[in-house]
Amino acid sequence: MLIGIMGKTGSGKSTITKLLNEQDKFLVIDVDKINHKLLEKEEVKQIIKERYDVLENNQINRKKLGIILYQNQSEMSWYNNLIWTYLEKELDLIINNTTKPVILDWMMLPLTKFYDMCDFKILVESNIETRMERILKRDNISEKHFILRDKNGLNYNKKDMDIIIDNSKGVDINEIKSLNSLNGNLLSIGQMLKIPT
Image (cartoon, rainbow, N blue to C red; front, side, top):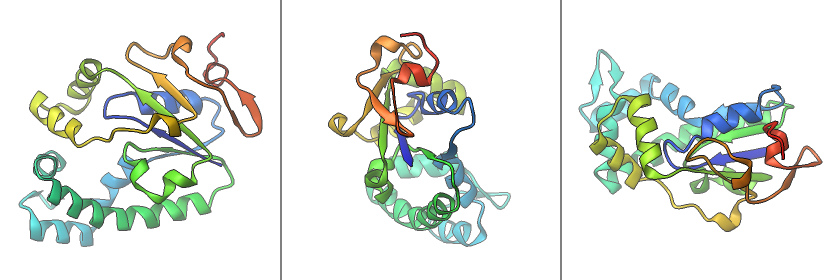
């Protein structure tokens, strides 16, 4: 089983994922972390180095790279085409070699083949002020950088989602929009998160 958790930057995807996986039932794949690891591969670094001046102490400065990409859609497309070739192989390998149900925590999930492979889709939402506050604190970036990053986020098709969670003020069972089944059991998101209904 493949469960997709998506949402704009700072919406709280990882928080929801942790709550869902409290009992360690799932293999959780944080795709951003895999992406960061890929940027440490020598062949990837060399390809990026030839195009951008973002290498410092033989490491890619991700903030510097991000500013370049968020300001130029064609550069973002070039980067995505490069990195997603590696990402797809990594994800296929992980997903095909586990017996656990998998949670994919990934903002860009709808742009990939894995979106249609998901048995269950969860969208995490939050207002822009809350998301900005979370990201500025977490990533130590400027408001300008956040706005650039946010503009390059996706608009999700809510009709595709099995559950939508408004996480603006933390998880609230009253904000849950639907029910669906996981592992063959009909559960509300509240039950999964151990929130009394």
